[in-house]
Length: 155
Image (cartoon, rainbow, N blue to C red):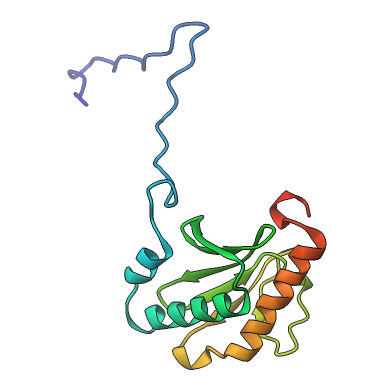
């Protein structure tokens, strides 16, 4: 942008003509729309996070073989009658999250979070991935979706 000459005020910004709205900004395609897969999500990770996400993915898929797996909201999401779980890798942790986490029994006390609905298991090393309690949470989350419907649609 040009600077105004000394002593001159800059021209006011142009306003749209009366009755006309400015053109909406183009929205970037979502990960799903651009064809990103869970395989690509995992391939983009490194270190223990890559191994942990791969293990969590196997655990979720074994515990819920009829569920679908896709990229939504930039992360792997698992659905059966609506979303029930997601996996998200961060710089220092990996989360296995549950839409109805606040309703899960969680006898191993793995879930954290304070929201009205969602909770997650936060892992900070590969050694913390334990199939039995995690698979139990997955199966319980699916049972809640079967009983109550899609959690994103008020179910």
